[in-house]
Image 1: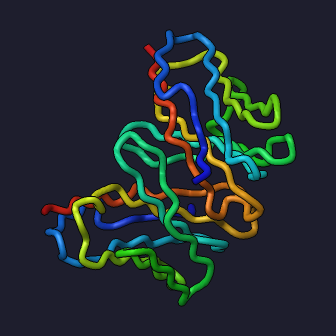
Image 2: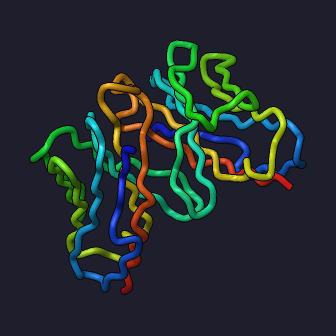
Amino acid sequence: EDQVTQSPEALRLQEGESSSLNCSYTVSGLRGLFWYRQDPGKGPEFLFTLYSAGEEKEKERLKATLTKKESFLHITAPKPEDSATYLCAVLLSGGSNYKLTFGKGTLLTVNP
Amino acid sequence: EPEVTQTPSHQVTQMGQEVILRCVPISNHLYFYWYRQILGQKVEFLVSFYNNEISEKSEIFDDQFSVERPDGSNFTLKIRSTKLEDSAMYFCASAGTGGAGGAFFGQGTRLTVV
């Protein structure tokens, strides 16, 4: 069965303490991998799409990378406003063109 | 900045009642989706809609569910006879020519079935 696993489930950082979130996937074919940010009681907010191994995308303090089996979301010098749940989702090839499969997310807390 | 708009933000309904959740997707988008998130669980795909028909649906999306795009702007999810286990956050999403790539989500409707 295809799976998307995110680790850690929760991460506490001090402001300015850089770290990385992991998303590993065991799927039969990957068309794209997506990162979203979700604040409590809100909808997922699109961050990045990655399509092939070796690809990298950056936005402010966030950088997403992709290998053949996993993706990392690197957070450099985080601020308290970066606190949120970060979701990873995959779009599979050879099947549905439309369905995203999500991981459970990593709850990031950045303390001032 | 364009956004997906959902109404109502919170809906409380009696078990067995019908509910309609409404969404206004981003205006030039062509692909529309409903997802749901039960409290503390993953975001789950329900259905996708393209060219005025369902493209794919999950096993969750059984006969009690239906979707409609009644005019050029609205996209609705109807749950015919609600069950307690339908209580969840329901998200509408839309995407442009890239399909599910970069789908943009609304803020959600919290459905509580009592």
